Every structure is written in C-alpha cells, then in structure tokens.
Amino acid sequence: MSRVLLEVADLRVKAGGFLLRDINFEMMGDEYLVILGPTGSGKTVLLESLAGLRDIAGGRVCLNGKDITHEPPENRYLGFAYQDGLLYNFLSVRENVLFGARARGMAGDPGVIRRMEQLVESMGISHLLDRSPKNLSGGERQRVSLARAILTRPEVLLLDEPLSALDPQTRHAMQLLLKEIHSAEGLGIIHVTHDFSETLQLGTRVIIMNNGRMEQVGHPKEVFFYPATEFSAKFIGMENIIRGIIRKDNQGQLWFVLENGDLNFGPLSEGSFGTGQLPQTDEPAILLVRAGNIRLEHGDPPVTAVNCWEAVIRNVFFDRTHVDVYCDGKGLWRTSLSFFEWENLGLGEGDRVRLSVRPQDIHLISGEGHCDAEAMPSKGFKKYVF
Image (cartoon, rainbow, N blue to C red; front, side, top):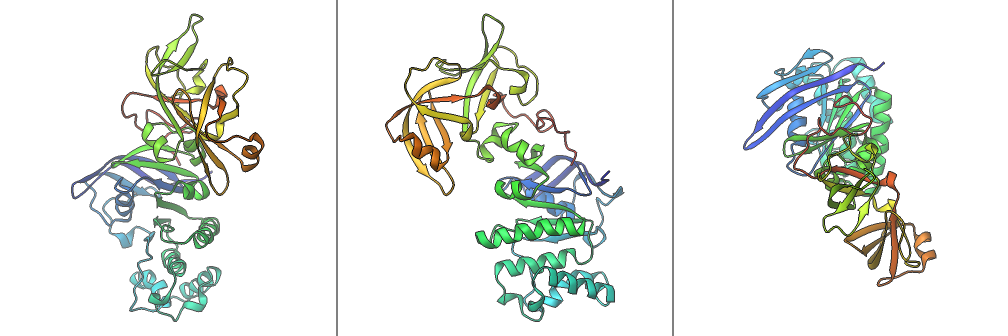
C-alpha cells in the first residue's frame, strides 16, 4: 500500500495582498497531483510555499512524516522546474543539470555523474551537454530543467506550468516524457497548470484552486463529469449550466424546473446530486449537462417524452474532432456530435429539432453561494486524500 508522502494541514500564506488559506490535503507516494486553476488563483504561491520559497503564516507541511514547514529549500528534498526552465545562460547545459547537485556538494560524486549521463541519454539531450542554454528550443530547455530537478532524487517533483509555452507537438512529447519519469523514477509529482486537458492526460488527482482556496478535489475524470461547484463547472468547460429550482410532484417525486417554469427534468434520485443527498423542495439548484450527453434529432413528431423538448438550431461550429450545435429552445443549449452523426442528420441552421437527455446524465449542484471542497467532494472519492 502506498504511503503518505506529503501532508499539508491548514496552510496559510500571505503574498502581498493575496492570501492562500485553508489548504488541506495528503498526497500518496505514487500520485501525480495536478493543481488546476485560473491565473491569480494561488497555484504558484502554493507550489512555492511547498518548496520553501515563501514564508508560511500558518499551518504545517510534512514530508515523509517530518515537519518541513520552516526548513530552507535545500533541506526539503524537493525538485522544482519552472515554466521557462529558468536555466543559467552563463553555464553550459551540463553545468545546469549539475547545478542542484553542486549546491548540495554532490557534483563530484561518481554515482551522481553516472546518473546524470543516464538521465540525459534517456531524455534525449546528451548531445546538448556542451551547449549554452540560450541556443536551445523550448522543449530542450524544459528537458534540461527536468533533468536538473530529478538528478538528486527528490521525494517530490514540483512543476510550474511546464508545458504552457510549448507548441502542440512538443507539448505532447513532454507529456509522454513526464509519464515516463513518474513511472521510472517512482517519485510523486505536483504539476501546476491552467489547462484541463493536461490534467486529464497526466493527473491521478486534481485540486481546483479559486481565489486562494481549494474549490474541489478529486479524480480528473470525476471532476470533469461531476463538478461540485458552479466555479468548477465553468472553469473545466461544462457546456450547459442552467439555473432552476427543485419541485415535488403529486407523487412525491423531485424534479428540476427551469427558472421560467417552462421545462422540467427528472424524476431525480440521490445520484443526481453532487452531495449524494436529496435536496429540499423549493431549493435553488444548477443543472449541469455535458454537450455530448444531449441527444439531437429531427423535430417531428411533437415532443411528449420526459426530459425531451423542441428547439431551433441557431449556430453550428466545426472543430477538429466534432461538431458543436447551439440550439435555442427554452434556453440556449449546446450539443456535440461526431462529423458522421451530423452529416447523417442532414440538418442546418434554422431547422427545428428535438433535444433529449437521459436522467443518469443529469448532474445537479446547489444554487446557493459557494460550497467548498469538503462540503461537496467528488462522487465516490475520499475527501482530500491522494
């Protein structure tokens, strides 16, 4: 069973006028943890606080059971790789890779030299050792930065937006490399990004940050399909976010009713709600449905089925892998189809259509204010444990 590698409890950090607060999580030794959030949400402040680069105002950070809250960076056994690589142009690539080892007095160790040679060979940068970093591409700089960060065998590798400045082809190659490093080195990785596609590709767990706080914690796919708050839903790109209220019918069944009262969804079960508990009647709620879970068909015959309604196609957008269709019918709805499905329908803008959604594809969250990560964990996952 994997051990608890990193424990963060009630962490509080002040950075100018910004406050990082209420940070609590445990990370297991084999985890690839992604910290996800928009610019200014506190992702990098959290990473730098773990690395010992910022003063901690409150709380505790433990690595392998040892309190490192106030230890200097060189005593934390953490590797750090910044977004732009942060290489020293006055040093060769070889000297950059050895920089952390030299700071710890290990650069002359034959074992360290052998490990460096193995690392740069496996990462495809051995031919660059005698070059200056200023002559490297973005992908090459990131590989050098990663080699430097893991040379001294850190317990945890901290990555700050490592892929954001790379072109798509290089980014994909670096994702594969990071997966290989995670597997081969057997170290925990904490990866900061604002890109949810990176999270799905790499992460085993994700923390969504919002204004210095943890908004939601969970498995990336679970967060993708079952965001716990309106902020999480918007940030990860939930296509249909509809406000309404919970009503009870004469048979005692619960339904989600649009704010204008024109459309009902249900009947609802406990599984429809992020909390796993049925809400109270007349409680505000937010309906979340993925575009791919809304079925689009020709508009005839008239709509009579449950969770089914008429609409008009307003806009059609072709993406690289699918077609997005925006429909106006008791609100604006976005559906997503494959090219084959769209061509077979033979529809276009202005056509009347029928939309429907299965009850099991309906996800509801509270419509009242902010609901923090502890109150609304992802379905089926233990809170804060990675």
